[in-house]
Image (cartoon, rainbow over all chains, first blue to last red; front, side, top):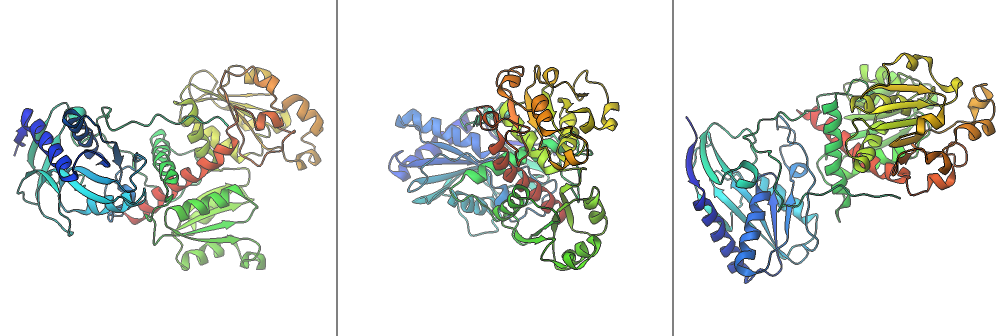
Length: 184
Length: 341
């Protein structure tokens, strides 16, 4: 079955703007906010959210990128193994509101690893989770604070969020076949 | 110390394509052992160096360690003295969350005449996953690797190989000069007895560098003279002419001169060596501007390298030691995770 397009172009941009507004509203402003995108696909999304926040708040929150490869619970089972990449976390996560940003929330294991990882950089006052798509099937007690879209899926399916920065288009696709990256 | 940080991409910059749409097979580490650099592909070397980049970033965090290798036991087995190699493997293993047991030849049953093979089997029987080994005899690591299912990392065997030193040297070069391909790397000193020179040669050739090996005729191995010509990437030149060798060099690596070579009649005198082959500021002027000065340590300052060069602006000797930890973390990570699959 060919990929089913769920959202594209302006719709994706509007969802990102809404998420940006929700994040700022919940934080009571853009102060002490740090956006941390999870590699690979959370990183450009975090950048987009920061630009959106700057557009209406006049202040661009610091943006970081986090690789959770060394914190995963399935290091031994991933085939092929994911390459490990450097993280880049802005100074001053101590006392900040860190918003972890990822494209698709699935089992919750990546987020579990990300929470362990971010704590190695300091002690945030609070950690929140923003995702573009929540596709269900959680295996851990983890729940997002900001959700672009809830998309009920079967485990046999894959949701792919494509962003202009990395893929040349803004779109969300639902595809048959398990996610070969198994990241979410 | 020259320290040039690699450009860290920020999240607001466009990323390179790496999503599922681009199906580029990443290199995978599938080796049980790391005995030398001569069989490593350019892709495997890249994988080690890129993984080391991530490990270097881990070391810079407030908590400079992770728990990825908890449950993995690393044994260092050293039949020869070492400060930096043993210490940096231990630090690397602990920074990855592994358990580390250090064995020295003195103080273990090796002193009672236990053979290498028996020792390695015993280490495996008590649950070692990775054995880091240094031995005065060439080929010792390969022998050990054949008799154990534990992964063996060669931490230096005789005058044969020292792969992790070569990889950390390559990593250090890459951080400073960028792409290695086409760069002129000059290794000066006792090439004949140097496992560092040999492992560096293979790794540098795989990376496409132009390598020049330089030293007195008595310390240059005849076997390397028959290597492919100097022309083009991956070439190797063997010469006794230091001034010529240094001309246009991007990297100058001095090797430790061991004083006992003089007793073996391979060096007329230390003074003669210093006069002809010491890396001095004056000689370094022939190298390219910004050329790196490296040394695997420990240095004999005033013998193979002048003190003002050893601690000069071009020297990255201390950084080599620091980078050694990140590169060894990468190697332990790749080898331990390959074992679990």
